[in-house]
Image 1 (cartoon, rainbow, N blue to C red):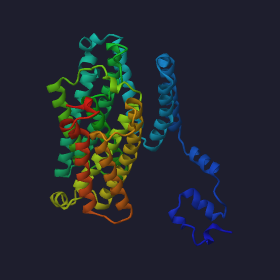
Image 2: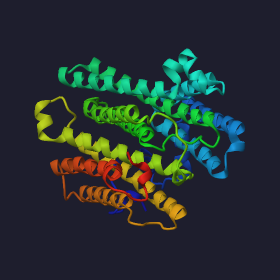
Image 3: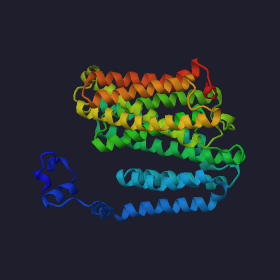
Image 4: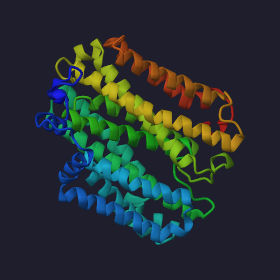
Length: 406
């Protein structure tokens, strides 16, 4: 029987190209042939990028394998196909990854195992030490925000393109800063070395990078830079807090991990959390752009409401998925550290509130019960709730997570 003759069969136009061809030829698509066709579409650049990742992982294992446990080896192995898939699906990620790798390795090589060289070597002192690279990141984000706003106000494509280039440069330098900081922590001592996501200074750098990369992905996907002014605004606010926190609290200094954070769970729980936060932040900025006030102020200069709602939905969907993973990992970490998966600690309670908030947002949006301005306001308020769950709980409440306080 022909598939097309079945009343329950979807229309050809709603199916992927491979399935359309299968229906037209009256044969069911074979999964191996679909995978083979997908692999055939890979270019030389795709395979070169994947092989470069494999080679880099192999070199890292040969050089540092003795210091890695089975868990860390598994993380290294899993990241190869994940980064390959990301680079295949999002081509601009490849030059970004190459630039980060080249500059990070240059910084590590310049240290020659001596942390004092940070003040002696020109390129370390003014470009590639962790503090300097993060300072460059901060400057690039501030200037990029101004360029995007100039482009929005003056309808200048050149200003918007400049903002995009600077946002990419900021993401590169911030990522280099984190990688070099990771190496610097081990130069202080093997017992001090740790992944740089252990305090507010480090995680605000991570949040800025994740939010910027998410925005740049959607900028390319929708072919518009009109949301950049708002997306970079929330990043600039984060960077301003980062700088204030660094200079007033000396947070840029690398400190040994407190006992509660000396766990392999931190290496996946915290990054997953901040992918969630980045998605929620981007959705809130798209929500602001959707509202009538900004649309009237910048008439014809913001993306269409349909585009903004789609960005909100996809950013929240990505953020919700990663936040869910982070919450589960956090429960496993809590069981190992404190003997209980859930203790209704203030941090855990507000994490549940955030999760329920975005679960409801996604459900009501998918059921088309809530649309338009209500979704936009909800995304904005959701970010305020998320901010309190992350920062406000540390400021005003105490609990098992008090090591993250200001």
